[in-house]
Image (cartoon, rainbow, N blue to C red; front, side, top):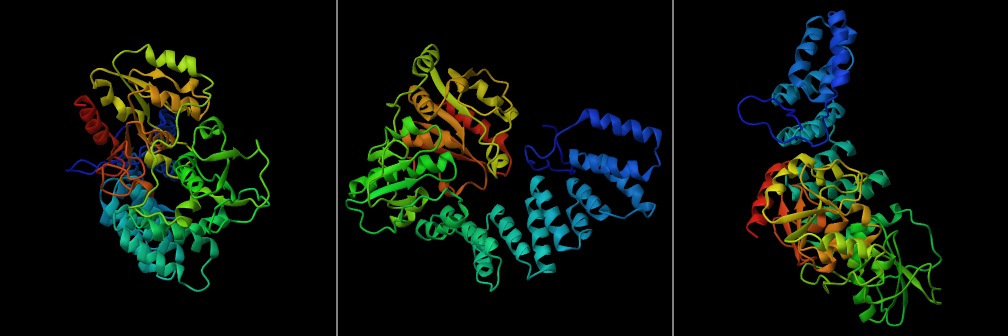
Length: 472
């Protein structure tokens, strides 16, 4: 990706890996139009807006300045000027041009995309000072504090927000859930999981005619465990099934697509919804409510590793085995992108160009476990993705490989549940389950956590991991 910030002096901070994309064809059309009508205010304004969207702040600024000199400052001229100045590192000048809570918040998120985290903090603080009673400004400020690593301050803001009388119920749930996730990230699992129960009304799962289990004595109780949210959450939550069974429950599971064969390897599963008739007296529970109902804390995380295996029926077992065993030496899997519809996917997925250092790790054959249709890195890769029909195939591949390098996605959870070696590459503000400032995971002892030192800066992290892998 070409550089998108142009501050003088020190190197510009890393920018959002997908925020700014070049469009040479459209750029050429704008230049042709401007050459024909160089004084047209409409063309100059549209061209400047296009350049801002490309991250070409040096080119956009003189166009906007010329409009300002002519008094053509209608519409969003102030905001566009502020964005151009922000992109050039002139943060104080940019902040001075925005004077409404909405424009401050909007420019603040642009600052975050540009890697200008101090400006993100300043702009959300200004928005809040302009509208101290605006719930949205409070929430935006809390988000900025999280990205600045000031989690306790963000939690305090959200707690005050939740306590406001008449707060919109949807925003109250968002604030409570975000506060719960922050507490989980800080290691307060008991409080965090309790607050996360506020998610239940938002899940929208099809109703089933069974009462909700409240965590009471489960001896002899038929209990239907329902999956929710993403595959990583599902795989992580399956660790509770053996514990429920040991405490006397008859555990049935509602499978997610592609997990049926994998679930057959999980100890304690008495049956799968859709394959067996549930007995009278069945109660139901959401999978991610189990940590709360069972009182999970950092010193008492159920971890009967492995709690899954590749012993199930893998549809493509012969082809996967042949592909992996044909390559001598050290064999490592690679996953560089998560699900594109994940709300924070741009933060947790690695631009393919940043993966180049992995090609220099001696003695390694890299196997792509990437199933989604995403841009590929220009390093030698053996493609396993087309053979991974469901999670039992992926489990088999992980058991045959010597380890996996992966971003925060379902493969990381599966490797951990299988007890396989893995290096999980984490963004600066990670998901709650990976906690902070540690290289291991109490949820998955076989995984090594490697973290960005700066937001969006994957290149440095990948180089560090390549060096580590080269030294074994």
